Structures are given as structure tokens and as C-alpha cells.
Amino acid sequence: MRQIVLLSGKGGTGKTTITAAFVHLAAKDHRIVIADVDVDASNLDLVLSPEVLETHDFASGVIAQVDPESCISCDICRQVCRFDAIDIIDDVYTVDRIACDGCAACYYQCPVGAISLEEPVVGRWFKSKTRFGPMVHAYLFAGQENSGKLVTLVKQEARLIALDEKRDYVIIDGPPGIGCPVISAVSGAHAALIVVEPTVSGIHDLERALETTEHFRVPSAVAINKFDINEKRAREIEDFCSRNDIPMLGRLPFDTIVTEAMVHRMPVTEYAPDRAISSQIEGLWREIKAFADSVPEEYI
Figure 1 (cartoon, rainbow, N blue to C red):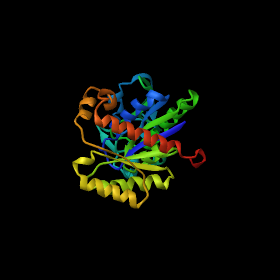
Figure 2: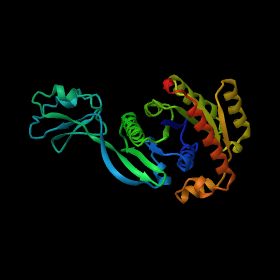
Figure 3: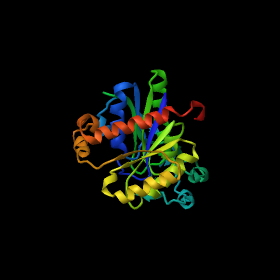
Figure 4: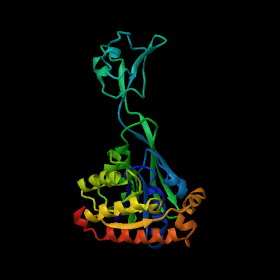
């Protein structure tokens, strides 16, 4: 079983579009598992239309809770709170669940034990089925943290399905950027494909993503999406990859059929298989699959 993760230095590069196409292409010849770990802005489900089989709450962190019947209004909790998360509303001490950082200062300082700590539900994760194979996905509620832990959970569940059912690949739609969710997404992957666009910040975004994958010893390759909207920038990215011995696996053109396919909730390779963009994405899939297959298992 091989894990292939798609990343990007920023959002909006076309990473999820390419992931959806990879899922469609891979499922023709292989038994796969799909994982959408972009939990802060999950949208692979919009293209794959999964049927949810299981729904699970994701609880993480701690939030203070004041028991109004035990509270003696001594004001100590409000004074020690560094985040201004405790307020008095209608003479009742109340915790702002968004502002509370879970530091527990109020809990330890309360003289009568009127404050408790609870683990709140901050997101949900799902086991689903698609016409291409099983899918694990999730979303974090707005304003919540610990997305890295939720990413890890989704990846673990996808990997367990792949091992239990002896599936060939786990295809992972990773989050953009370089933060904790990305670190969780690349952990244990056999290969990362970094999708970059030919913009002013393209090389900078690529460098940041590569620094992350290299630090965690994940073999990485690059694909330029919409290369023809700025061919000068695209050549700069290619030159950067050449100088740094980074495999350049593909250059995909801009094509409005991609948007049309998304409107119809289908991967572009399924919606328009005869279009040039579809054959180019198919070539890219063959390249990244061979790249992942070439990584020795002991390397991971």
C-alpha cells in the first residue's frame, strides 16, 4: 500500500481538482482509499459526491465551564484569565467558548471548585463510500484549533481501511501551506506532489512546501497547473526545479472544461476524457504513481 499526498504552497492552485482526477484514474486499475485531510476547507466531497456511512464527533482541547449554582462571584477567575474569556452577563459568570484558550488558570484558582474543564466537540469526521472506493473526510468547525490532530485521525482511518482491505493506494488531498495540518498530512507518505501555479509568489510558495516535505524526508515532485497563463513564470519554476534536482512531472494548461466538470460534480478526466487536459492529467498520474512505487518501503 502506497500513500500519495497532494500539497500546495497556497490555496487555489488546483490541488483538489487534480486529486479528484487522480482518484478517477487510479480506480480504473487499482483498489484505492481516498482521504480528504484539508479539514479547514474540505471540498473534495463536492466533486466525488460520497455517500456517508458513518459520522463521528471530533473532540479536542479543553474549555472552562462555570457552574452558576456553585459560583460565589469572587471575581478571581475573571482576574486571572489572560484571554478575557470570562464575563459577567446578568450577574452570572460566563465563559466565551471562542476566547477561552483552555489554559485552566481559572480552574486552579477558583476557591470553591465552581469551574470545570470539558472537552468540546470541534469538528466531525466521516467514513463514506464513493463510486471510486471508500473515502474518509472531515471538517473542523469555524474558529476551532487542533486541525493537525484531526488530519492525523483521518489519515489513520484511511490507512487502516487500506491495510484491512488490502488496497493499493491511499490518495490524500492535503491542506495548503506549511502549518501543522500539512505536517500531519505528509507524515508517513511515500510521495508528495506539490501543485504550483505560475504566479509572482509561485517559487516562494513552492520553496516553503519543499522545505516542509524535505524536513520530514518525504520524496517530493512538482507539477505546474495553468502553466500557460504566465509562461515566463512557469519557466522560472522549471529552472528552479532543475537547479535543485526536484522532479518536474507535468505542466497542465488552463482549460475552462475543468470548471464545467466541477459544476457537474465530476472529475474532469471522467467528464471530458477526450479533452487534452484529461490526457495530460492521466500522464501526470502515471508519473507520480511510478515515483511513489520507486520509493523503498524502508525509507518511510
